[in-house]
Image (cartoon, rainbow, N blue to C red; front, top):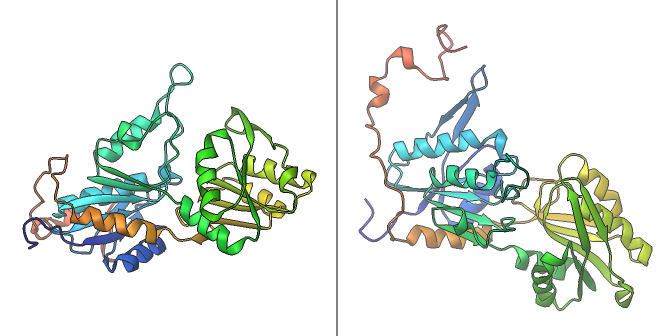
Amino acid sequence: MPSPGHRPEPLILALPGNEAFARNLANAGAWELGTVETRNFPDGESYVRIPSDVAERSVALVCTLARPDEGFLRLVYAADAARALGASDITLIAPYLAYMRQDRRFLAGEAVTSRSFARLISSTFDRLITVDPHLHRYASLSALYTIPTNTLHAAPLLADWIAVEVSRPLVIGPDAESEQWVSAIAARIGAPYAVLSKIRHGDRDVEVALPDLSAWSGLQPVLVDDIASSGHTLIEAARQLPQQGFAPPDVAVVHGIFAGDSFERLKPLCRMIVSSDAVSHASNVIALAPLIAPSLAATAESVSDLIRHRRPPEPLDDVERAGIDSFPASDPPSWTGGRE
């Protein structure tokens, strides 16, 4: 039993596809790494089990929310199971946070999914830790989420990678809105910077224009962005840079979504492409676990009252009382009356 005023150290649990990130996070904080078992019934429904003992533990569920529709229900089920099994509190570690782009109703009848998604997360977890959410019209996540949120920033990590790997860099941002972010990266490593002009006509229709960069002729261009989704901006910038006499650029992004064939189209135009491991991808080079671990450690030490009112855990003998009619997905080979 933890002493009053002290929370137990977090137990790290990974949803499918997040195992490597969770392992790195557990190692960074010297924390225990638990297990989540998931699979699907023949009808596509999800089966979730937490073999690890979570009773009276502070649980951290690790799940990047790139392509969230594929596995969000499993995440909710895992959080609900941990709470029912007696977890003291549950933190969501989402290196990439989805559903930030639809932050207003652009056309009549549209769902404002950023608010809907925030309600779902806030009703399921006690805290949220994420990295560089793609904020537009919201000043902060607190405008959306009713649970404590901690927004971390990977720009210093990108800057440090550029400083080590790129000689005489010219840092280039995607648009005017990124200038403050890009200038901070450049200032950290003592490099010049520029930003593109970008006009968005639609999800996949973006007009990109480079300013006159002749003053920095001979430097190595480095395109930086918080997210590469369609990749259109990066592809157009990489195509235009040689027209001003520059070498193929390097690319460094926080969230490498690289939807469709965007990475394959971008790669021949660049010297190097790197991303953080917020979203699992072949370009992952920059590890975020050292950035997230101190935040999680501070969260685990917090003794402030949580917003949510918790229901009591389920009795631990429920499994023993359950009859064969309620046996779950892991049916023994001899069982023939299970779900189809």
